[in-house]
Length: 293
Ligand code: PLP
Image 1: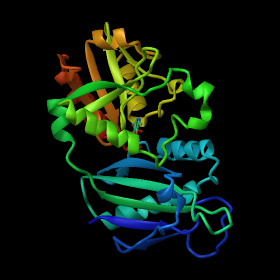
Image 2: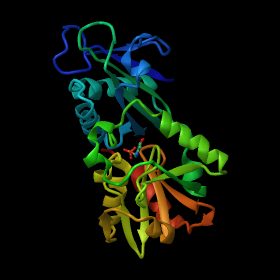
Image 3: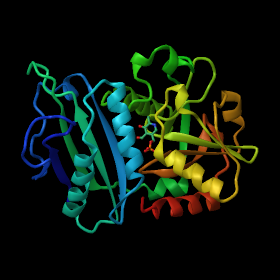
Image 4: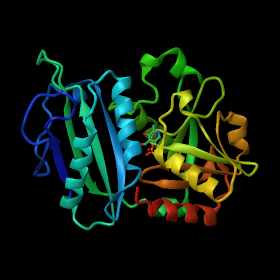
C-alpha cells in the first residue's frame, strides 16, 4: 500500500502550531497549480531505500536534502519533521521487504507574496531492481555539455544539488534507449567522467576502486560512499578522484550505484564488453541490503 504524508511545517521557522505532518489518503492533491515546484522545477527531493523497515543511509540523505536546500537558497528543511514522517509512512506501508520514500520540498506558491515552502513524503513498494543487479546493464557515455570545473566557475547552475529539475536526467535515458542501451554516464567537454542521470559510478582500475568527486559538480551519492566503505573494510584500496575517459575505457570493472539499485554492474560500455565480477557484486549488494543505518 503506498503512503502519502503532507508535512505541514516543512521548513524551520514556518508558522503553525498543529501537528508537524499528516498522513493523507494516497492520491490526495498536495500541490496546487501555482506551486513553483511544478511550474519551475524549483525545489528539491531525495529518494531513500527502505529494506525490512530500515531506511538506508537515513541521515546521509537528510543531510544532503539540507545541502540541496542551501544551494537553492530555500528555507532550511525541518529534518525532524521529515524523519518522523518517514517513520509514519513505514508504519502505513506495513511489512514490505523493499520500499522507497521520496521527500520533496518546493519553494511554494508563486503568487502568495510570502516566502513559503511545501513539503511531502511519498512511499511505495520498490520496483524490482534485483534482476539488473545480477544481469548487469548496458551504458553509453553522453556529454553533459560543460567542463569539469563547472561547480567552481558557475555555482548558480546548481550542479550537484538534487533539484526537481530532472527533465534532462530523463531525456538522456530516452537517448540511451535510442542507442540501444539501458543507462548513461555523463562526461565533461574536457574529457572527464561525471556520474549517471540517477546514479554515481564506481570503477575498478588496475585493482583500485575509484569513484568521482563531488567537486566536479556531481551529486555526492550515499550508495557510492557506502560501497567504497565496504570495499575498504575488505582491505581494497579506494580513491575519490577525477577519472579521465581513457581510464574509463580501460576500467576492469564498472558499477552504477544508487540507493535503490545498489551496485549494478555494467556489462557493456559504448558497445564494448566490460567484465562483470559477479561474486564481488553479489557480496557487496548483500551487505548493502542488510544496512540498518
Ligand atoms: N547522481 C544523481 C544525479 C542521482 O540522482 C542519484 C540518486 O538518485 C545519485 C547520483 C546516487 O545517489 P544515492 O546513492 O544517494 O541514491
